[in-house]
Image (cartoon, rainbow, N blue to C red):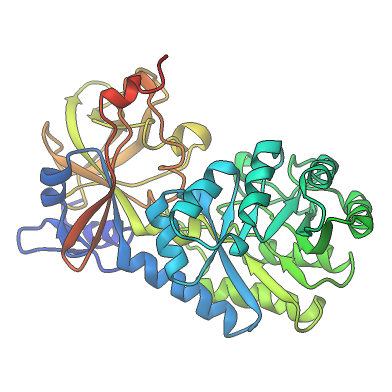
Length: 422
């Protein structure tokens, strides 16, 4: 394999407009990755702002062109950065928030609380008080305790709109850690319990059941499994709102071929046309498929160790990308100015864990200490699961567009590591 043979393929995993300049350096959003490293250091998450805005617009267009009364609610948990939530709000999306912290950042981003959907299988009084106080539009009832708490917390004279989350009984073809629609899931209610919850809400003086919610899982590459969740909702009756969740998968590596947003929308709307009342409101909640491909993470090689296995160690790892350790997500990588090709190595992180392996068997072209290396498709769940293991400083987020780079989240300082001490 020569060093340029896989260059086009690895570039396909980066944001759509990514290209090589005359020096063979990767450019994202019109910015050279070595310039970004020089200005912001490494590791750094680089987000193509224009690619992200196009994705948001595509989602809205694909669904509304097929079902005019549909809304796209960005699943904030996939990238709960204030700047990301602000961008989604500017593009006309609603926000799906999973907990009090995401309400706080969404409000700081300027989002309209009435356009938020609150999730959570174990919502606390504090979180529900935040939702009620800010006027969150829809609270998803995940259990009977949610109803008890809401009836106690919603003040007289107010009515809180709710959706009842239903377990659809669909076993998703995905990692067990991100499957949510199977029987026995910790999320939602069985159809029988959902009927009981609906009746309870209908009798409440302070709650209103606007409709139903469901979710099959995450990183699904089969739209039929996603669409299969519509029938269990339809069987529960006629409502104004049907929130069909999210879950569309993305291309992390070469052998994956996820459906397009258009194919996803067609499958979901076809099921809706066949089973749901005409004129009802549909909500979808893309997270991973909205943000994953818009970002890459930039590292510097710290050590190359030759032996039975060649280990290439970088200055990040499980502190900024926990997806590999949690559910063995496969990524790809390249040296930013020697793109593609090379012999397979084990790309590892700097953390004191054998499990801190970013990619096993990834081809890299002559990796050496000091090289810059980029891992694409890191926009989903890497930021939200970042941590300070071994005293690591959480990494910055940089938006790039039109040749301009701007910092939207700074790197932790050493002082930040002590900020919570008392």
